Image (tube, rainbow, N blue to C red; front, side, top):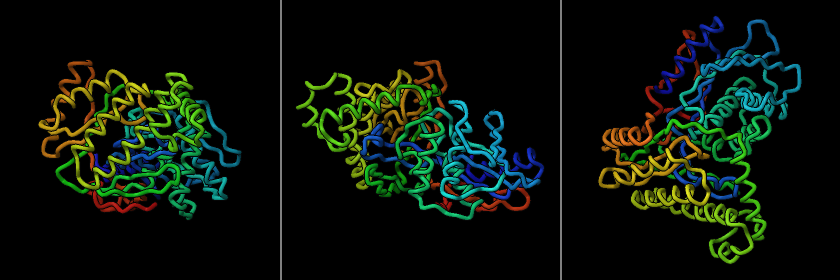
Length: 411
């Protein structure tokens, strides 16, 4: 489904629910990280791109002027009612509406008080797939609120506001990557983000002979459990032993010298992060030079480290990467790795564009044979970041969007 089709569908559903067309439609993309996993909260580098899957929010002021926000979602969630006359607080842990409520609270903290509105949220970003459906929801809400309040935030401030919403309201201590790429994504560009300085660099990826294939294992994971916070604490413990502010400041040599001072699991966690930061910088250099073989080798090395040292892979993700390795460069796959927080979700592969169909069919067949699970596979180019789509009076998006190509981001 193209972004235009999603926007039109959301506008039509909004009209059915609320009895009038939406006044505003905002959208923000999911993301896939080509390389640089679990480095963001270690002040390292990440290398994500926005993908051609979006979360769209259609909204309109209430007919009665009430200071109430009504949020419906097409993912079969119960509607959320947000009373703007009372202080906003997190709801029960795991409640989906904590993400948009946290963003609304962030606007209020800046003195930007939105009026009440009715909204419908629709998304093609799979939940629990490691493609950052949460950041897409947060950034889409922030983009909508910019339009409603008439105040456009600085892009970095906007991303940090959304990250804080996830920390404080969803209880998820995420790094900055997901929100930054959803805000700053550009077509045919991959974002090399320095998570310490927050300096973004958009690296061109314009070679039409190469595509990015995303393979959803359809094994879902919960990131609000203990696994993610535990690993973050382990990284902090390693940095303390090494005497550095963060693992960004450590080298492989430093780590080897201090190996005897730390538990084996702490050592392995640090070895992954230090190596992954180096791999990410080299991968960005490879993309700049269109050296796809080198980038692919770095992706395989990243997966092995995530599997063995960081221990966030799972049998289904390992199966995808093993199948990709058997297909190899001769079959059209340069490299493949798990992506996202881990424990399920998606793998990402760098592939030859003219072999996408053959690769997809073989991957699906072999994965299904090995696991008994049907994967979901799609191809994407680096896509546009958050944007506002103006609907016309008939409830259809008036932006000229035949696909995600050609969209201009308003961030």
